[in-house]
Amino acid sequence: MTAPRAVTAVATAPETPPQIWHALALTFAIWLLLHGVGLNEYAMFGKITADLTHISVEPSMQFLYSSPFMFALGAMLRPIGQSLSFVVTYGCGLVLMCLMFWRWLQRAHPAQPAALLLFMLWSPLLIVTLHWAGKGDPWLLAFYMLHRSSKHKALQSLWCLLMVLCHREMGSLLVVIECICTRQIRWAALPGLALGHALIWLYHHRVLDAMPVGRIGFLGADWLSIPQHNAANVFGFLALSLGCYWVYLAAFARPNWREVATLLICFAAALFTLDYTRVFTILALPVILLTLPRGLPKALQWLQKRYALPMACGLCLLSMQMVNSELSFSKLPENIDQIHKVVGHRISP
Image (cartoon, rainbow, N blue to C red; front, top):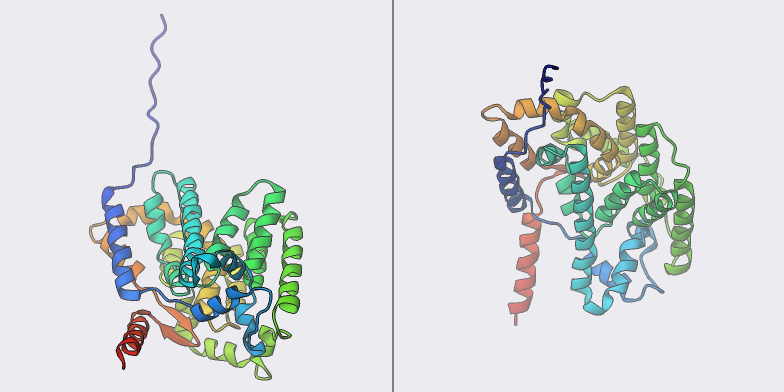
C-alpha cells in the first residue's frame, strides 16, 4: 500500500481589497473637482465638420488641425448637432481607451488590476486625456493598445493606419518606440503607416483650402525658441514629463537601459512642442506599460503600510503639466470664466 502523497498548496495572489476600489472612486471624484475638464477647439470642430470637402483654416495654424480622424468622425455624426457630435466623438474614444486599458490591466495582473490602475494614475494620463478634450488622443491610445495586442498582421496594419490619422507624428513615433521597447520590428505596420501618411497628404493638399504650413514653418526662423524655453524650466523639463510616475520608476520598477533610451527619445521629441507633458506622456506609454507590472510586487508591499494608500491617492491628485513653458494645474478657473461670459452675454439687454 502506497503512502498518500502530500498535497502542495498553490500560492495565489490576493484579491484586490475593496478599499482600493473605494479609494480610486473617491480620488477620481476629487480629481475632477480640482482639475476639471478642458475643451479644445470646439468652435473650429463645428466649422470643419460642417463641410469636410472645403475647409478654410489660417495656413499658419493648419498644423493644429492636421489630423483628420476626429473631423471625419464628427462629420458623419453632424446630423445629431454640433455639440452632441463633439461629445459623442470624443466620448466614444475615451470609452474605448478605458476599455482597452482595463483589458490590459486584467491581463497584466488578474488579481490586482485596481492596484495597477492606481499606480498608473501617478503618471499624467488623466490630465493629458481630460484637459485636451477634442483632440484625438484617446482614439490614438486605444488604437495603439489594439495594435500592440493584435496577432494578425492585417489588423496591426489597420490600427497603425488609424493611429496616423489620429496624429501623424505621435502615431508614427509610437510604432517606432514600441519596436524599440519590445526589440521586435513589426513589418506589418509599414503598409498602415504608408497609407496613413498618404491619406494625411491628400487631406492637407486636397481638402484644406490653402497650402499647409507645417510645424517647422510654424516655428519660423527662431525654431530653437520652444526647446530653449522648455529646457530652461528644469523642474518642468524633468518632473512634469511623467509626473509622480517618476517615483514609481525610482522606487519600484527601476527602468533598464533600453527604457531609459526610449525616455530620452521622448524628451527629444517633446522638447519641440508647446504641449510638452501631453506629448511626452503619450510617447512614453510603452515604457509605462512595461514597467508597471515589473514594479508592482514591491509597490504592493509598500501599499500594505498604514498610510500608504492615502499617500498613493494623494500622488494621483498631483496632476500637473507644462504647456507653453508654463505650469498648468487646473481648468476650473478657465471654465468658470467661460460660464460667466456665456451667462453674462445671455442676460445682457
